[in-house]
Length: 324
Ligand SMILES: [Zn+2]
Image (cartoon, rainbow, N blue to C red; front, side, top):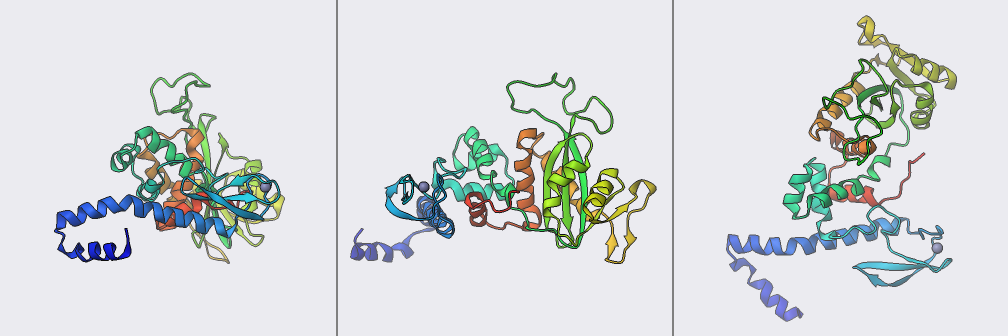
């Protein structure tokens, strides 16, 4: 539309009644959402644009495709856009992405999202895991000071798998054996007193010192004071790596002790477990293979760490900087 025409059209807007205003807003919403998404993709891309094939950061502009600027690598001559190599590379309906991410921040069910956005529920489910692929790597650089660590267990699940690698459970959501067994997925959570949190699905059955080495050690500051329950794996892990360690003997009924550095307890990490468990229950069983995505999702939500759909989109297409 030409400028004078637009001016004339725009000047009539105050004459709209409520219904007409809502109608107009709804009509503009997808396009506005798309503009926002494209602008964000461009911003995130500009910060660290490099060729996904050879990692060269020299490029020139090379036309547009599907609404995105294309670039051509000066070294290998391949062309790419800012989504190439990300989990969102070939995801369609970009005008709906921000609304979708808003639904993720509200922990909406697949069904509710499908209804709200007018997409098929399979799409809503597939998108969930595309958008959650990277947030799970968005971790703090280092846990500092008093750092609580504890593990929790949830029943291993092969939900959605075509072939089970074990006999089906006769009575649904219960383990056959009592206590900690290979039927349970072990989730480690560590949290320092400034609420920085890391989590990992470390394997099945009881926690081992080797798992702590792999999943906890890279995120611990050298000066950290590790606090855990009296499980032997923490003790031998801490001794081997020269990490200051205090154990709380929960079985003996001790919950909090006074230490030189502050209160010695694992209550922050335990309440994190509680929130995680409660939140997971809404999904009525999560497949073990997707569990890391759900852990990352929970970490996004906890304490309102990620507050807007835009911020979540940046993480979903951003560079993975803390994958170790
Ligand atoms: Zn290249």
